[in-house]
Image (tube, rainbow, N blue to C red; front, side, top):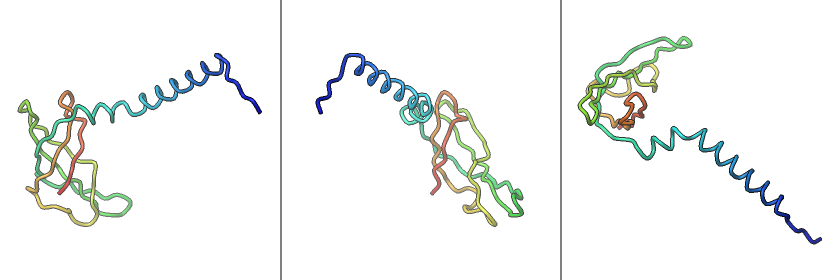
Length: 110
């Protein structure tokens, strides 16, 4: 079986590859940007916020850190623990954030 690709076949393959790569870039552009432009700071847990979710007591850490420009940021982390806070108030955490938008961040716990 002899298969030859025509120019049109190659153009379809190339166009498909470009479309797939474009879709992947579009879906993960924020993660890629974060990976290459993030800054790091040391933060600390300043308090714990309690809540009841699905009948369980959960705790969210309230974290404070300072950006490279000196802006103080305090936020409730998305991560939670059940029953009791996992770390004491004052525990240090590493914050990875976008310098252009410190609201985009990730917390690395000890």
